[in-house]
Image 1 (cartoon, rainbow, N blue to C red):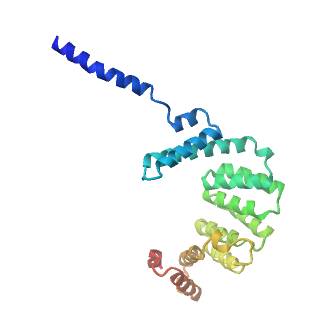
Image 2: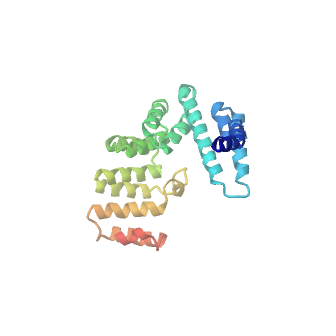
Image 3: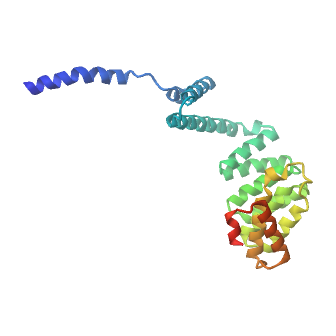
Length: 241
């Protein structure tokens, strides 16, 4: 009897708590996930940002990350569904997002549309070459990057990506030539060369190619090494050279 009374006493307190938990209102994320409208996204985004206002609320950070991931996927699906309606620059932007996400096959398909529609536009060729390089399709990457250079001789970072292709492909002499050709175009392109591919990374790529080509003792190698030391005297990578 005492056990039954004790159980009844516990249930008197637990049951209301369980009921309250069941009646707990949905979170902003739950509302958004059931109905992904812009209004629900903004409401949830603002709610989780507010939670982070005065403290490092990592749960809110995680929910914001999920929100942005869901919204990104939704918008990419929309772009994919209507890719035929997109203008060329919109296609290019869409493909570049896919490239950033390492969805390389999808990106290549969109760049191919741009290559067909605007064969003399250098940028889609260059980015297509990067996507192909990431997939280790070096022969096709070379073709795309050479087209980028053919359509715009001053396209500095196309040469550098081509050097990366040759480095990973084992064609070190071709890689050295590609970098030298690119450096001859430095500052001549319409794009900021440092934003596209920093001089420091080019210097280390150059050194790597020299080393792999067996040219570590040459004057060109020594010049590249001194250049890297001036750019980043404390860089750990210098110990390799």
